[in-house]
Length: 408
Image 1 (spheres, rainbow, N blue to C red):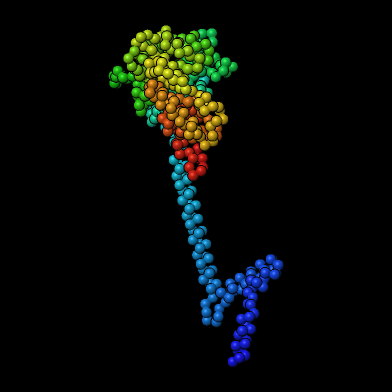
Image 2 (image 1 turned 60 degrees about the horizontal axis):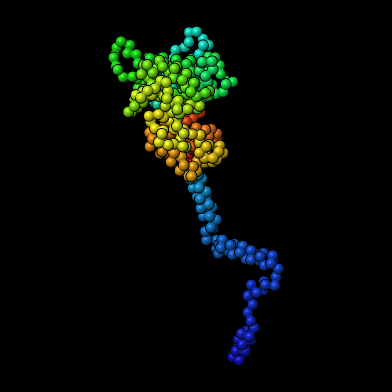
């Protein structure tokens, strides 16, 4: 009994040493290896069967791993299929619709430059603009198209622009003096074709009589087009020459005019810009107190109450002037500050009953271009000024950027 008690006292007197304390004096690498060995030993014991009748855990672990892998792979395949199905649906949505078969498409296909063949191809054919929906789009520098005027009309574009140079009494159309050619005149590219179109659109063929003046659009005969002349030579004399060539259309009642009390719409609205002086519009020799058929392109960034529907139609400005330069628009589009400024200008133009328009819009890259188009449309732009008329009129560019991909 005394021995047991003595042994117990000796045990209590000797301090117990833990494994951790034993390892304190060993190098760090050795301690880490020892702990990993113990962890592996614990894992092995957890998988070790105490007797042969005990089921091995490995088949269950393999089955669960295979189940997890199969499920993950299946979900990935389903996600892949859904993603591409949705993507293909959006591609079908934005792809351009085929052009309708009508007089316009036939004219575009067979068009040649005026004066190059005799007799000249027709400027009007039956079912002229059948199935073409008019759109509030302005064809900037329209004379640069493969087929001036007709390319734009075939797409439903309601605004065209011709740069006019007065040289030796004739109005030539071109961007610069060096680009002028004798067969490309304001009359041959625009006025003669428009005269033929409107004459045929208003011909009753002896079957029906009507006092209504029809425009170029079969689906909406009251929808007119804007014919904008960008004067490149001295303003007063060039505008006077343009007005003189428009006289036959004016006499037929085909030009929109201000009556002194309101706007009387016609199939063609003539807007003068470029070197056009505002005073030349107000004091045109073809105008009086109850008739004015030329309208000014007012400064959208500096509108005052002197510009209104009685003397102006467009209110335009270069978007680069508004945002501070050609490189101030981000790839993601207009900033909140830029949008706020533009919204203010658009609202001001609307309050004066003017059609807002911005030119010099980004042309490249395409995703930036279509983003700016969409932003301007959302702000209520009056007329979308574009150079890429086919993309603007035929593509559903509002859906161009989907799932991080640019589809147009």
